Image (cartoon, rainbow, N blue to C red; front, side):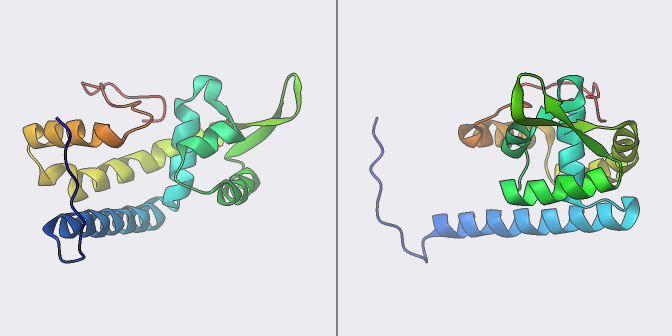
Length: 166
């Protein structure tokens, strides 16, 4: 059955739902950012990069792959990786067979920093998000959000088994 779309107006309740989603997302990210910076000395963007690398095969990704996985622009990612490299949390290595390509590689220090920050991040996710829903509501929400997910890596994840960085 084809759904007929009506023109939306700013006062439409569906637009209010969208705005609520944006406000909640923004507030949650701000709170997580604050917690990570205050308690772990690590910005949320840095945490995201380190986590993506920890979960990658051999703890390395090409910059283009990393850019697809994190929530930053490519130029923002390059600057962030430069800072992480200066801190000794990542290194860059050439890609064999591709003179222009480089890998960003998680160092032992980067993995240690990620492991120390992970409890702070998970506590915030639990407090600001998970604790607000029942398990059934979370399953329903996950099902609804899958409609938008172009990379459903965690879509079918069950259980409490840790991933590489957790």
